Length: 403
Image 1 (tube, rainbow, N blue to C red):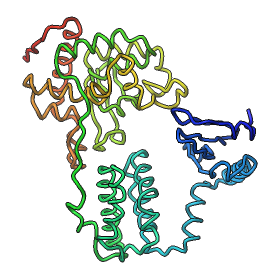
Image 2 (spheres, rainbow, N blue to C red):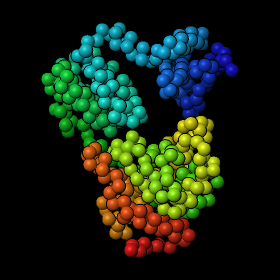
Image 3 (cartoon, one colour):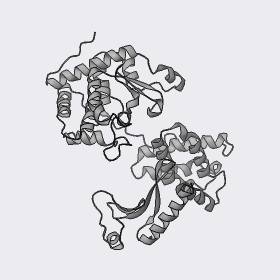
Image 4 (cartoon, rainbow, N blue to C red):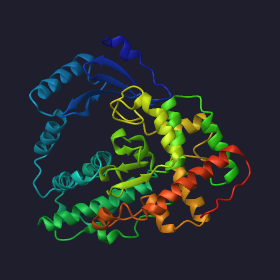
């Protein structure tokens, strides 16, 4: 249904941002602070993208529709309007190939093929928001350490210390790329080591006391929500993979007959293929789920769009529904739970680390080590599943006997 001006004028802020759709991808985003932004959602080369069209009411409904039509005409000609806007922006600024933004975008284009799409998007978004507005037009070879520090301190001043450190690291990589491509002679970020306050590491909330683990497992078994979510919650402690690896699991990666899940390298944080031995309890859950989602691509598809995996917040939302706060338990906390108890119970530390996919950072070694300690890991994963099953049946502390 098309929007009307009276609807736009009367749109009030709510606790969460919401959208008012006009059609053909055009919508108005209303933030909790009351700002109203025109956005266009579209697909290009099979990927969903978003284009900012301006602020209401500086841009009227009629003007937003005209901008939408213009963008859709470009798409029909196989031109990405977002990319065209970037190119125009660069032309309008009369940038030279030595400008920091040019060097940075060239660096990003060259190396982002080795990253996940999410990681690549996060880096370019941070550069566009925090770095380019102040350093983008400056020649990369003329930027000084104090100049860069002021930009990083601007990020730090809003309390985003970890973001400031990431920006420092990213800028360092860009400057080093500028050096090897002949557009700078030194890396000013190297002089800023220690200039930012250290990051206070936040550990993912986890439950490691055995009676509490038993209570959590029983709560999961009694979960009354969506069955797919319940299966994800049941598998999370059995497999203790990263939440992103679990939610993006595909049926083609599983061999239930041989009780194995082989995760491709491109899905792993360390970019090396990973084997997850499946205990009989995990295979049972997957066989229960297969009749519901087995005809599709994803083991845990999104409720609204089966062609996409479940949301990254689904498991955490399930834990909240069970009454666990984010300070008590998170989806990532199942990894800490397994790591803590398996180490306490005397399993080979290297086998545990290999199963957690914490190593190997060396790409060549990683290509060959994905099956390292596999017989011991199979034994460990089955014993761990048996241990969890015992905990779920009673509140008493249960000692795991290792053969």
